[in-house]
Amino acid sequence: MARQPDPDLEERILNAARQLWKKGADKALTMRAVARAARTNTPAVYRRFRHRDDILRALLQRTRQEFFRLIEASSSVAEAGERYLDFALSHPHEYELYYLNEHELLFSAKPARGLTLNQILKQERPSVELMKGKLAAQLGGSPDDYTRLELALWALLHGTAMLLIAKTIQPPHAAEMRSACLKSVETLLREASRLPRRK
Image 1 (tube, one colour):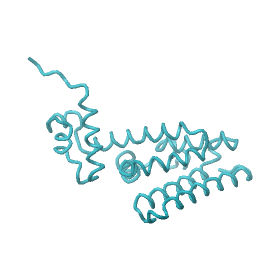
Image 2: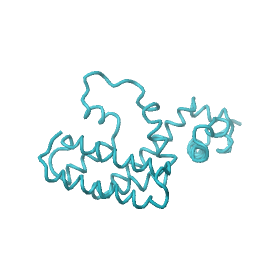
Image 3: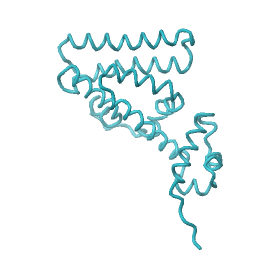
Image 4: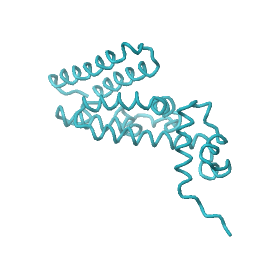
């Protein structure tokens, strides 16, 4: 009798890979270890994911979707900033996978010459476009009016997240750092509301 395909296997493989990534990042994520953790065999893993990088891409896409949904559900830009930090600090390994490997795994091809910054961001980062839309809804104008402001907010939030994840900011000062970051977001938004819109 022919073996029936396991409809849950791909999900088990990705869940196992995620747990392995959390435990030991790059070093822990081997095809054999994934198979063992998913309670299957290595050939079954290879039938679904030809290379280890394919598993990483799938994990990265999953993280990207979770992150996007979280930001999308925010009622304001300030709330989106809080959710950004919450996600980064509660999912530090996924956050690092996302930012340390995203370009290599998803965007290794060079962008076409002559593309503007806005066009590159639209191709590569849907969350950037989402935030620009939230800025336009809150401050008026077009999403493309807010490329620089969105990049400034992103740099502020990402820098804070990485400093806290790496424990460069000692734990006794972590809450103060987070608060300073979110106050800076509010200040940038307040100042942007007073200025004429510029790309």
